[in-house]
Image (cartoon, rainbow, N blue to C red):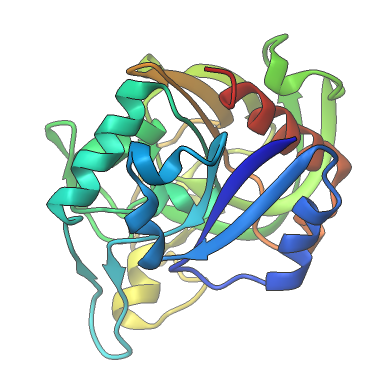
Length: 257
């Protein structure tokens, strides 16, 4: 039985349909903890009871109804504990909006393998435009590599889900999944316009360079195995059996020390 800590909060989601994924998952026992309380468990002593963490959270961002969000750095003890987990070889699966977490802490983006920007920001020594989003996209996912995370998943499958036009560190990840969608600005909406101007589904005057079509990857950081899956926005995506298989496989793979 794999014991996982399921870390949530920071972004809205439909709770019970999401929890149903884990309740139906064979061989997995999950404990749900919300941010910021979950930060107390990011250290070797508290994490010893778990085989892996599954992060569906978005910490470090405070949204406001009348102005741009505030971005805060994580507490020092949390950063030190996180680094100790990585050095020890603790496994992590990051899902969907987790790639937007801790925008004021660049190290987090390195751990995950990329970043979704709500606001223009500097990353890896260059200025990046705010990222793009698009809900309800029906697209074809192509498996790029025979890997334990993709075991039992068809070479191609369709899913309806939200996609991101964001930063992916293609030079530092092992690609697992690619989307057939065209990752160009005209096919996405500006994240900044939502959080700063309250304009949903708007890309007027917004510019963004063409982005990566990778939506799933793995990587090693320290002794840890890391997986990121962009899938998982809503109950339609939650119910997709291929997404569920990928997630179960990812949990199993990162749990191996």
